Image (cartoon, rainbow, N blue to C red):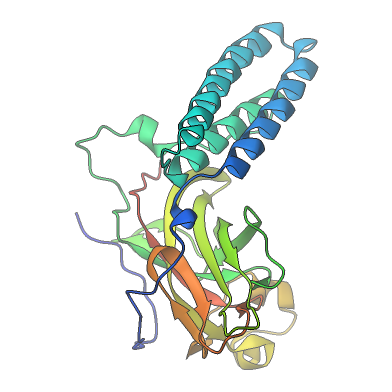
Amino acid sequence: MKFPSFGFPLALAFVLVSGFAHPAAAQNMTTADVDRLQASIVDASRDISQLQARDATLAGQLQRELESLQEESVYLKVKLQKNEAVPRSDYFDLRDRIDAVRAKARGSAPATSSRSTTSPAAKADIPVGTELDVRLQQSLSSETAAVEDRFEATTLVDLKEGERVMIPAGSVMRGVVSSVNKAGRLDRKGSLTLAFDQVTIDNRAYPIRGTVTQALESEGVRGEAGKIGAGAGIGAIIGGILGGFKGAMAGILIGGGGTVAATDGKDVNLPAGTVLRVRLDSGLDVR
């Protein structure tokens, strides 16, 4: 199988700090995460109750699924109470499954898991380690962000395997802030830990695990003006349909686990339009 080609027009060199320290808590589940799961379960139960009058059979099925998910959340809570470390990936997995139940109850399409259609021995269409360049749709700052804040970014170029387009340019990737450290008075540098957990391709959502490895500064509207035709708006530019960026962002270091840290004792600020390079930590089958 050929690895996907990016068609990326520029060759850039970047200095990475691989040993950057980040809080261990960023990798583990917390009691606050359990509270969020419980709140989501309550919301899902309410959605199922509203579904009961429309489709009692489906409502019964979803209620049984939700009860199973509730048991899992209780199990994780007990582990935390015993001071056992629970990987935060377990939280994200359970949260997404609760969201899927809610989506079914509301009649919207849930995210489709590639794991359910792929045997352990099968090779993924898009292998682990593949990197994508995506453009932030909104600004992020360690001064104002909170853990569990959601954000979106769009892919810059087609990701291809041969002539097949696996992920088209402009596809939306969903991200989450998994930890935040605000800058303090004692030279405490601000940092954000960012992760991506979903990509939408042709209106179909796929779960992923993606880690930020580089941050690139956008040329902005002025820098991109020469690349677009009359009538193209800012939305198209920020939407990531077009390329154009200056290079590695000054004052930013990317550490292990996708931690983006300031180097000057200030808060990390990533403006809308910032380009992030994202490494896939899980394979993805695109059907």
